Length: 138
Image (cartoon, rainbow, N blue to C red):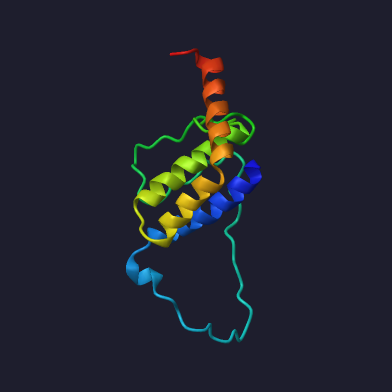
């Protein structure tokens, strides 16, 4: 049932991203032009194994990425989440996105909350219990 919630949620998440675009970017385009030749995608060479990752554009010069875990990942707060925690994080992100939108997206989000009310309640309970097991009642 969580997979169903995630699948539906991801669709709404994409809609939320679209909602955040400037109005000019949301104007429908005409039919696509005929493609004369296939597009060629040229990828940059892969960085050396010991190369530091490049910072995203606009990052602060003093930014330090999280420590690596030795297995190619990073030690971040979202590492090692359970399925319930992942679902809950997605729901929270969709909630924030829906706050900035109007109309059909909000209606769709509210419909998702109604349709999956029992699953989301069970998910919230599982996340709460996991938190209490890790960190106590506080």
